[in-house]
Length: 257
Image (cartoon, rainbow, N blue to C red; front, side, top):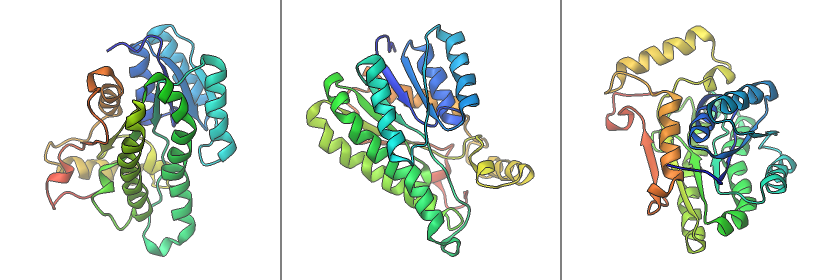
């Protein structure tokens, strides 16, 4: 797979799956636009990409839940590169709790996980149509597997899956493909950032490893490989698909997260 001359925008690129996507696309010679809220982490990821491929990523410190920041992502990218070929909507947050947590938690999660990809894809679509590019949304297997303690997150990812399918229908006639990857448990910092202690986080992953059919959880690089495939010409006939990568989580009722 070769992304030479292709401009790839990755949100949430400062850590976890986003950082792994940045490294993977760098290895395939993409011109990278790295978006995140944590500038020091973004700069570290950018340096890793330079060491891998020698290119110079465009680093954009932005909060995708802020409309003006989303608009700036597109403007800065087009000002520098003149095009957008791939949009990876990866930025995401979670909130631990159910209905009793109140509506503020839902609003915050939906703003980042659902509204931001909707707005960013809409602004990027004219550029993607010109390049006959594509969108890859990073969703979750919890879009279809309910969890009462992650209710807002589950809702946001279910909405993201439907957005993926609807946008694939709308953008297909313009030559733009839209797909999603739906990871199960992946060792990232998402639960730690939601307030889970280091010890509880480790117990969570250890319990998942014992419960999942494959006896392991995925790492971020594996998810990135699937993102790169869907963004590549090898997947040129794939659109409107939501691909699970979950170590078997969705196979049985005895596996929970």
